Image (cartoon, rainbow, N blue to C red; front, side, top):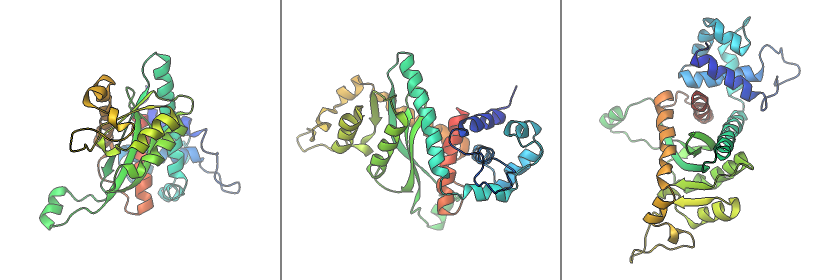
Amino acid sequence: MKSRVEQIAALAMTLGRDYLAAYGATRSRHDFTQRQLMACLILRAYLKTTYRGITDLLAGHAGLRTVLGVADKVPHYTTLQKFSARSQVVAIVEQMVGRIGQAALRNRATHGGTAAVAMDATGLETSGASAHFLSRAGRTRHKWLKVSLTVVCGSLFPLGMVVDWGPSNDKCQAADLLAKSAVAAGRERPQQLYADAGYDADWIHRWCRVGWGVESLIRPARQRADGTLGGTYRAAMTTDHLRQRGYGRRWHVESFFSGLKRMTGAALQARQVEAQKKEAALRVRAYTLYR
Protein backbone atom coordinates (compact mmCIF):
# COMPACT_ATOMS: atom_id res chain seq x y z
CA MET A 1 0.00 0.00 0.00
CA LYS A 2 1.31 3.43 -0.95
CA SER A 3 2.02 6.00 1.74
CA ARG A 4 0.12 9.29 1.83
CA VAL A 5 3.12 11.10 0.34
CA GLU A 6 3.25 8.64 -2.56
CA GLN A 7 -0.49 9.00 -3.13
CA ILE A 8 -0.22 12.79 -3.30
CA ALA A 9 2.70 12.50 -5.72
CA ALA A 10 0.73 10.11 -7.93
CA LEU A 11 -2.28 12.45 -8.02
CA ALA A 12 -0.05 15.42 -8.83
CA MET A 13 1.49 13.50 -11.72
CA THR A 14 -1.91 12.45 -13.07
CA LEU A 15 -3.53 15.88 -12.89
CA GLY A 16 -0.49 17.62 -14.34
CA ARG A 17 -0.77 15.66 -17.58
CA ASP A 18 -3.45 17.96 -19.02
CA TYR A 19 -1.79 21.25 -18.05
CA LEU A 20 1.93 20.75 -18.54
CA ALA A 21 3.86 19.84 -21.65
CA ALA A 22 6.46 17.14 -21.19
CA TYR A 23 9.35 19.59 -21.43
CA GLY A 24 9.66 23.35 -21.29
CA ALA A 25 12.12 23.60 -24.19
CA THR A 26 12.76 21.38 -27.18
CA ARG A 27 16.53 21.71 -26.83
CA SER A 28 16.81 21.10 -23.09
CA ARG A 29 18.53 17.99 -21.75
CA HIS A 30 15.13 16.44 -20.96
CA ASP A 31 16.33 15.09 -17.63
CA PHE A 32 12.97 15.70 -15.91
CA THR A 33 9.49 16.42 -17.18
CA GLN A 34 7.55 19.47 -16.03
CA ARG A 35 5.02 17.19 -14.35
CA GLN A 36 7.77 15.66 -12.24
CA LEU A 37 9.07 19.07 -11.19
CA MET A 38 5.58 20.37 -10.40
CA ALA A 39 4.88 17.28 -8.31
CA CYS A 40 8.11 17.94 -6.38
CA LEU A 41 6.98 21.51 -5.66
CA ILE A 42 3.62 20.26 -4.40
CA LEU A 43 5.35 17.74 -2.14
CA ARG A 44 7.61 20.50 -0.85
CA ALA A 45 4.55 22.55 0.14
CA TYR A 46 2.85 19.52 1.69
CA LEU A 47 5.89 18.55 3.76
CA LYS A 48 6.77 22.16 4.69
CA THR A 49 10.37 21.63 3.67
CA THR A 50 12.98 23.37 1.52
CA TYR A 51 14.23 22.64 -1.99
CA ARG A 52 17.20 20.84 -0.48
CA GLY A 53 14.87 18.99 1.85
CA ILE A 54 12.71 17.55 -0.92
CA THR A 55 15.76 16.41 -2.91
CA ASP A 56 17.13 14.70 0.20
CA LEU A 57 13.77 12.98 0.71
CA LEU A 58 13.74 11.73 -2.88
CA ALA A 59 17.28 10.43 -2.56
CA GLY A 60 16.28 8.25 0.39
CA HIS A 61 12.76 7.22 -0.69
CA ALA A 62 12.82 4.61 -3.45
CA GLY A 63 9.03 4.27 -3.54
CA LEU A 64 8.53 7.99 -4.08
CA ARG A 65 11.15 8.05 -6.83
CA THR A 66 9.30 5.23 -8.56
CA VAL A 67 5.99 7.10 -8.42
CA LEU A 68 7.60 10.22 -9.88
CA GLY A 69 9.56 8.26 -12.47
CA VAL A 70 12.96 9.53 -11.30
CA ALA A 71 14.41 6.23 -10.14
CA ASP A 72 17.82 6.82 -11.73
CA LYS A 73 18.36 10.53 -11.09
CA VAL A 74 17.03 13.04 -8.55
CA PRO A 75 16.56 16.70 -9.58
CA HIS A 76 19.02 19.16 -8.08
CA TYR A 77 17.51 21.65 -5.66
CA THR A 78 18.42 24.54 -7.98
CA THR A 79 16.42 22.87 -10.76
CA LEU A 80 13.32 22.97 -8.56
CA GLN A 81 13.98 26.59 -7.60
CA LYS A 82 14.34 27.68 -11.22
CA PHE A 83 11.18 25.84 -12.23
CA SER A 84 9.28 27.47 -9.36
CA ALA A 85 10.48 30.90 -10.52
CA ARG A 86 8.53 30.59 -13.77
CA SER A 87 5.69 33.09 -14.03
CA GLN A 88 2.97 30.60 -15.04
CA VAL A 89 3.19 28.37 -11.96
CA VAL A 90 0.31 30.08 -10.12
CA ALA A 91 -1.94 30.03 -13.21
CA ILE A 92 -1.31 26.30 -13.71
CA VAL A 93 -2.06 25.57 -10.05
CA GLU A 94 -5.30 27.57 -10.29
CA GLN A 95 -6.42 25.49 -13.27
CA MET A 96 -5.60 22.24 -11.48
CA VAL A 97 -7.52 23.35 -8.40
CA GLY A 98 -10.48 24.39 -10.53
CA ARG A 99 -10.62 21.00 -12.21
CA ILE A 100 -10.97 19.23 -8.87
CA GLY A 101 -13.65 21.70 -7.79
CA GLN A 102 -15.57 21.12 -11.00
CA ALA A 103 -15.46 17.36 -10.41
CA ALA A 104 -16.77 17.90 -6.87
CA LEU A 105 -19.71 19.94 -8.20
CA ARG A 106 -20.46 17.25 -10.79
CA ASN A 107 -20.37 14.54 -8.16
CA ARG A 108 -22.68 16.54 -5.92
CA ALA A 109 -25.21 17.05 -8.71
CA THR A 110 -25.02 13.40 -9.78
CA HIS A 111 -26.00 12.20 -6.32
CA GLY A 112 -28.97 14.55 -6.13
CA GLY A 113 -27.54 17.00 -3.60
CA THR A 114 -27.61 20.79 -3.69
CA ALA A 115 -24.40 22.02 -5.28
CA ALA A 116 -23.22 25.08 -3.39
CA VAL A 117 -19.99 26.99 -2.84
CA ALA A 118 -18.79 29.15 0.04
CA MET A 119 -16.52 32.16 -0.46
CA ASP A 120 -14.07 33.73 1.97
CA ALA A 121 -10.43 34.76 2.45
CA THR A 122 -7.65 34.12 4.94
CA GLY A 123 -4.17 35.48 5.56
CA LEU A 124 -0.77 33.78 5.62
CA GLU A 125 2.09 35.35 7.52
CA THR A 126 5.13 36.44 5.53
CA SER A 127 7.44 36.11 8.53
CA GLY A 128 8.11 33.37 11.03
CA ALA A 129 8.18 35.84 13.93
CA SER A 130 5.53 35.01 16.52
CA ALA A 131 2.83 37.43 17.63
CA HIS A 132 4.40 37.42 21.11
CA PHE A 133 7.80 38.46 19.73
CA LEU A 134 6.30 41.26 17.66
CA SER A 135 4.34 42.50 20.65
CA ARG A 136 7.41 42.53 22.91
CA ALA A 137 9.47 44.23 20.19
CA GLY A 138 6.82 46.90 19.69
CA ARG A 139 6.26 45.96 16.06
CA THR A 140 3.06 45.56 14.10
CA ARG A 141 2.25 43.55 11.00
CA HIS A 142 1.67 45.82 8.03
CA LYS A 143 0.78 43.22 5.41
CA TRP A 144 0.21 39.54 4.84
CA LEU A 145 -0.55 37.29 1.91
CA LYS A 146 -4.28 37.02 1.33
CA VAL A 147 -5.73 33.82 -0.15
CA SER A 148 -9.33 34.10 -1.37
CA LEU A 149 -11.20 30.90 -2.23
CA THR A 150 -14.53 29.51 -3.26
CA VAL A 151 -14.95 26.04 -1.75
CA VAL A 152 -17.49 23.40 -2.76
CA CYS A 153 -19.71 22.72 0.24
CA GLY A 154 -19.71 19.14 1.46
CA SER A 155 -16.55 17.94 -0.27
CA LEU A 156 -14.51 20.99 0.81
CA PHE A 157 -12.62 21.13 -2.48
CA PRO A 158 -11.66 24.61 -3.76
CA LEU A 159 -13.11 25.83 -7.04
CA GLY A 160 -11.59 29.28 -7.55
CA MET A 161 -8.53 30.95 -6.03
CA VAL A 162 -7.01 34.43 -5.94
CA VAL A 163 -3.72 35.22 -4.20
CA ASP A 164 -3.21 38.89 -3.32
CA TRP A 165 -1.88 41.14 -0.58
CA GLY A 166 -3.71 42.17 2.57
CA PRO A 167 -5.02 43.92 4.47
CA SER A 168 -7.71 44.84 1.98
CA ASN A 169 -11.47 44.71 1.72
CA ASP A 170 -12.69 41.29 0.61
CA LYS A 171 -14.65 42.90 -2.21
CA CYS A 172 -11.36 43.95 -3.86
CA GLN A 173 -10.73 40.34 -4.93
CA ALA A 174 -14.39 39.33 -5.33
CA ALA A 175 -14.78 40.08 -9.05
CA ASP A 176 -11.65 38.15 -10.03
CA LEU A 177 -12.52 35.27 -7.70
CA LEU A 178 -16.07 34.95 -9.01
CA ALA A 179 -14.89 35.09 -12.62
CA LYS A 180 -12.33 32.33 -12.05
CA SER A 181 -14.89 30.24 -10.19
CA ALA A 182 -17.39 30.56 -13.03
CA VAL A 183 -14.78 29.53 -15.60
CA ALA A 184 -13.65 26.58 -13.48
CA ALA A 185 -17.21 25.38 -12.86
CA GLY A 186 -18.14 25.49 -16.53
CA ARG A 187 -21.42 23.66 -17.03
CA GLU A 188 -21.32 22.33 -13.46
CA ARG A 189 -22.74 25.56 -12.11
CA PRO A 190 -23.52 25.60 -8.37
CA GLN A 191 -27.00 26.49 -7.22
CA GLN A 192 -26.01 28.68 -4.29
CA LEU A 193 -23.09 30.80 -3.12
CA TYR A 194 -22.58 31.67 0.55
CA ALA A 195 -20.40 34.52 1.80
CA ASP A 196 -19.96 36.57 4.95
CA ALA A 197 -20.55 40.28 5.45
CA GLY A 198 -17.18 41.14 3.94
CA TYR A 199 -18.72 40.52 0.51
CA ASP A 200 -21.94 42.41 1.16
CA ALA A 201 -22.60 44.47 -1.97
CA ASP A 202 -25.46 44.62 -4.42
CA TRP A 203 -23.07 44.33 -7.38
CA ILE A 204 -21.84 40.95 -6.07
CA HIS A 205 -25.44 39.74 -5.78
CA ARG A 206 -26.07 40.96 -9.33
CA TRP A 207 -22.91 39.28 -10.65
CA CYS A 208 -23.93 35.96 -9.13
CA ARG A 209 -27.64 36.00 -9.90
CA VAL A 210 -27.73 37.72 -13.27
CA GLY A 211 -24.28 37.07 -14.66
CA TRP A 212 -23.71 33.54 -13.33
CA GLY A 213 -27.20 32.27 -12.56
CA VAL A 214 -26.30 31.37 -8.95
CA GLU A 215 -28.35 32.30 -5.89
CA SER A 216 -26.16 34.51 -3.70
CA LEU A 217 -26.68 34.39 0.07
CA ILE A 218 -24.56 37.02 1.82
CA ARG A 219 -25.02 38.30 5.35
CA PRO A 220 -25.58 42.08 5.19
CA ALA A 221 -22.96 44.27 6.86
CA ARG A 222 -24.82 47.54 7.30
CA GLN A 223 -28.36 48.53 8.09
CA ARG A 224 -30.27 51.77 7.93
CA ALA A 225 -31.23 53.69 11.04
CA ASP A 226 -34.73 52.21 10.89
CA GLY A 227 -33.33 48.66 10.72
CA THR A 228 -34.16 48.02 7.06
CA LEU A 229 -31.74 46.93 4.34
CA GLY A 230 -31.15 48.85 1.13
CA GLY A 231 -30.38 47.57 -2.33
CA THR A 232 -32.23 45.40 -4.81
CA TYR A 233 -30.98 42.07 -3.45
CA ARG A 234 -29.63 43.01 -0.03
CA ALA A 235 -33.14 43.76 1.22
CA ALA A 236 -33.99 40.06 1.04
CA MET A 237 -30.97 38.98 3.11
CA THR A 238 -32.78 38.77 6.44
CA THR A 239 -31.69 36.41 9.21
CA ASP A 240 -34.71 34.16 8.70
CA HIS A 241 -34.19 34.01 4.94
CA LEU A 242 -30.53 33.11 5.27
CA ARG A 243 -31.30 30.41 7.82
CA GLN A 244 -33.98 28.89 5.59
CA ARG A 245 -31.59 28.83 2.64
CA GLY A 246 -28.92 26.90 4.56
CA TYR A 247 -26.55 29.76 5.33
CA GLY A 248 -24.81 27.64 7.96
CA ARG A 249 -22.96 25.88 5.14
CA ARG A 250 -20.83 29.00 4.75
CA TRP A 251 -18.64 27.59 7.51
CA HIS A 252 -17.35 24.92 5.12
CA VAL A 253 -14.85 27.40 3.72
CA GLU A 254 -13.67 28.16 7.26
CA SER A 255 -13.14 24.43 7.79
CA PHE A 256 -10.97 24.31 4.67
CA PHE A 257 -8.83 27.22 5.87
CA SER A 258 -8.47 25.63 9.30
CA GLY A 259 -7.26 22.36 7.82
CA LEU A 260 -4.95 24.16 5.40
CA LYS A 261 -3.17 26.00 8.20
CA ARG A 262 -3.01 22.99 10.47
CA MET A 263 -1.33 20.93 7.77
CA THR A 264 0.90 23.44 5.98
CA GLY A 265 1.28 26.14 8.64
CA ALA A 266 0.19 29.76 8.86
CA ALA A 267 3.58 31.31 7.95
CA LEU A 268 5.26 31.18 4.55
CA GLN A 269 8.88 30.13 4.14
CA ALA A 270 9.61 32.15 1.00
CA ARG A 271 10.88 35.71 1.37
CA GLN A 272 10.55 37.13 -2.14
CA VAL A 273 7.16 38.53 -3.12
CA GLU A 274 6.46 36.34 -6.15
CA ALA A 275 7.85 33.27 -4.43
CA GLN A 276 5.45 33.82 -1.53
CA LYS A 277 2.46 33.93 -3.87
CA LYS A 278 3.54 30.71 -5.53
CA GLU A 279 4.14 29.00 -2.22
CA ALA A 280 0.65 29.96 -1.03
CA ALA A 281 -0.93 28.60 -4.22
CA LEU A 282 1.07 25.37 -3.97
CA ARG A 283 -0.03 24.94 -0.35
CA VAL A 284 -3.67 25.14 -1.40
CA ARG A 285 -2.96 22.61 -4.13
CA ALA A 286 -1.12 20.26 -1.77
CA TYR A 287 -3.88 20.34 0.84
CA THR A 288 -6.49 19.73 -1.87
CA LEU A 289 -4.67 16.57 -2.95
CA TYR A 290 -4.27 15.57 0.69
CA ARG A 291 -8.03 15.71 1.16
